[in-house]
Length: 83
Image 1 (spheres, rainbow, N blue to C red):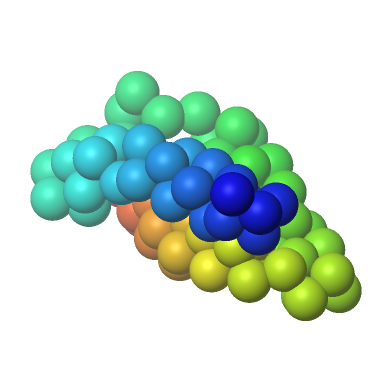
Image 2: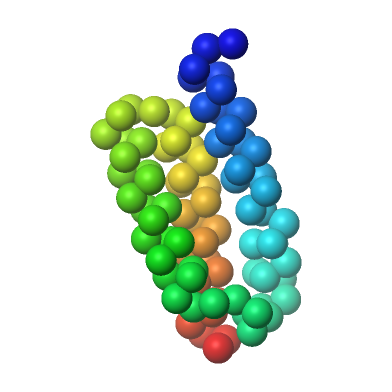
């Protein structure tokens, strides 16, 4: 298994682990248990990881962080709307 495949497996697992909570939050619109500051910092961090993946031309990082950025931005927007 090459380093690229290890990256794809890691990216897939960490992104998939985030999906159930994102789906639950999107469906319920219940953001009371979510920290605004944590999600703001997390979303910014994911954006930087995506940028880093682009600089490295690392497809596992690019794909995983694109999906995670979309989900975390959606949750952050919901948090701001439904405080």
